[in-house]
Picture 1 (cartoon, rainbow, N blue to C red):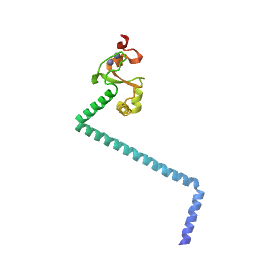
Picture 2: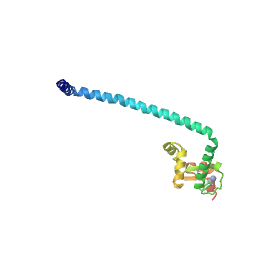
Picture 3: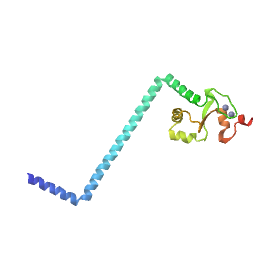
Picture 4: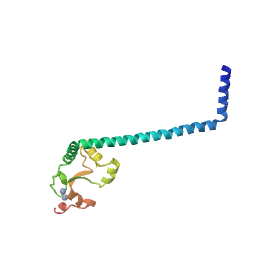
Amino acid sequence: MDKEHKKKREYMRRWYARNLEHAREMSRKYSQKHKEANKQRSRRWNKDNAEYKKARDKKYAQGHKKEIQEHKRHFRQQLLDGYGGKCQCPGGCDITEPEFLTIDHIYRDGQQERKKNKGSYAIYKRLITEEFPKDRYRLLCHNCNSAKRYGRLCPHERKH
Ligand SMILES: [Zn+2]
Ligand SMILES: [Zn+2]
């Protein structure tokens, strides 16, 4: 029995030595096959999970419309207050109505940044955590904002 076993092992050893390439290829194929299966499994998991999250968020949004609205309003108010609470046009403009105000990206790179940060919410959230950095952002009303586009002066500034 033991002798038989030894013989078998010896045979396998020789077989591997003779078929090294083949053996390697087989194990490579094996792991590749499983790699694909693993990849697929995690892909499926991500997809299921994303759908689950989406459904959960939707359900939450439906049941908490008021809270969400309130949160958005509060969030925006925090941002506006942090940036002075009124239009910061250097020509003097005293618009304070939140509905008229917007965060101006001084270097006009808002679009790129939104892409990088996946939406403006992420940027604004960062501005709040960083305590309202004023080097790249300022608060303007929509009128001054569109007048100052492309580096032009706002009519308010021309008056002075
Ligand atoms: Zn203004
Ligand atoms: Zn202005």
